[in-house]
Image (cartoon, rainbow, N blue to C red; front, side, top):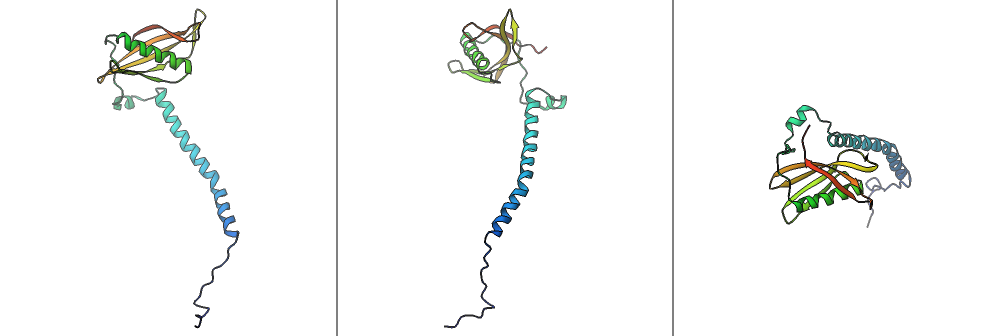
Length: 167
């Protein structure tokens, strides 16, 4: 059998390492740009989270926000078992140095979060910290503000707890 003419047969060209070096050079050239893009995009996202976390919102944002429910300062105090769960969450959030800790009482259906408000301060030589606790049940939400101080055993004890007033 005769072979086809050489003009019809295409020979595969050996490219060797030259192509691999070209691809590597392209990645090296675009790598820094990808890093810059990732850092600037991440920075914008972080700044947004910090602004909303720290409460830097303008009036229009606050008016449009449907997520926040105004606290009910006239609500009655939660039950003692709910307060015990919230106190345990206060001790946990302050011991761990966390930004917020959720809590839940399965017996009553009450749940919420505890969030430290300010940095440590000293009261008669004892370290203390203010906090805000939310109480949510059946769509109704109330808030309590309080202060906890570090006990001799290293645990945190709630010293003050009252309905939160937005003043």
